[in-house]
Image 1 (cartoon, helix red, strand yellow):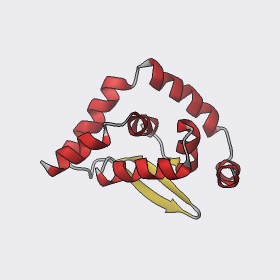
Image 2 (cartoon, one colour):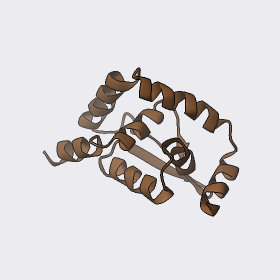
Image 3 (cartoon, one colour):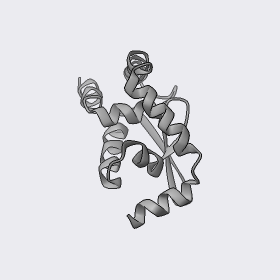
Image 4 (tube, one colour):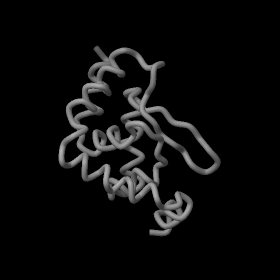
Length: 121
């Protein structure tokens, strides 16, 4: 029951759901997610921590950057099913399509320049 409740709580916030959908098929660094959501880096980090605690996302460190991706085959069935359900339910909504278009532009930016700009701002 605890895992289920952790997952449902993680999915109860629009920004966390947007993050989850943005990670579909790709890895993103925190700066890219921050740019997409237009939130403070500390707020984005908190959202990602909640998603990670629910085991919905995984991370890896690469130099100064931490990259996030959706949990894969090693995730428990409950997690994989929650991700699949979220993707099926929302991937084609206008809000998520708008995020996908915005993300295309963000991915054209050099992550180092993007991260440097966010730490100064």
